[in-house]
Length: 424
Image 1 (cartoon, rainbow, N blue to C red):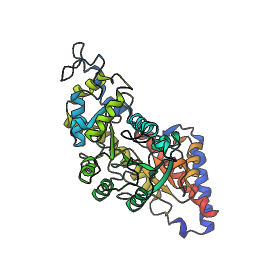
Image 2: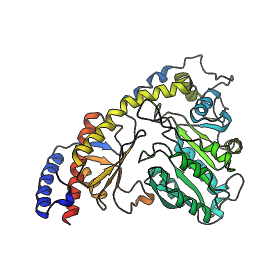
Image 3: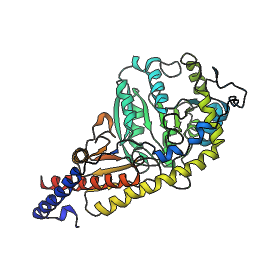
Image 4: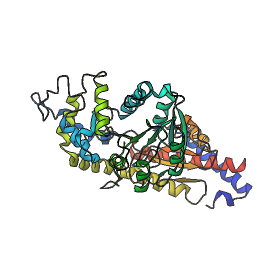
């Protein structure tokens, strides 16, 4: 089929009729398919089922003798701190292990910064209207945190190497009310972009107008390559040290898509000084984390290499799904001039761009035919995509057969919405 732009009105009208007929058949099938969020599949979760029984009745002490059944161990047991430290190329005293949600760690830190400031500084909320830079398309839950705390969000365009650093540098250096930036530096949500070495170095060398500016470095997909190995990015904490900004970066990571999404472990990492400050605050917040769950993870994975080996198993499950997305989109949409999409080497998503003004219509059509997608616009602050073109495809959870059915419906919806757009 030739590109839509080269079709006559009569050709487009005939095509639209064909697509409407195909779409009606999909609607009549009564399918209920879900591609809304990046959720591990049952097959992935089963990879860790042995973790449910890996502790015995007399195995409850960590390497330093801590009784994991009891209080204490505020920043995590030594075994797990070392696993995270080795995976992130840090030292254990730069790591604080949390519960099952890195999002909770991020929310908590923003909350404390808003109400009490950074490292005994002035509370953000006392200084004026707080602002965050938000590389877009980006992670919708980051934007939800900002909305909750009434933080103004400033979109920053994403390129192939990461955020537009010219814009980031200009804004951060000129406005003292810009207090933070959200970053997913590796296999970014939703684009799958991996920040380049130059981009990471420029982040570390930022000269913020606000001395309490922080980089929220959400390295959620640090271990989530789709091949037998991961792409590597420079160590933001070390680069910040070298640039004279030792306390500027907060790094977050998670096993939510490594072990059990609802019962994993997470961590926050930063300078030793920042970690000591945060631990003092934690003494007012908790008497200790779930150390038995940490011990389960330590016994199951053993070390950082155990995690890496385990993630190869995840990749084997996910590769066919991402290949199916790529193959289907190419077969159905390539050469039509109505869409483009990413082909990530890791992470959990494919970022899809339709013709301008078509994303909401595509998502609505899919919903009519029983396919649930993340709302159009969700990948932009306040749910407002200025071009109404970006859609996040989450292929990880459905079985291959259901994923294929959902993608077939999606492609019909894309072609139909595009024909409607051209015909006005």
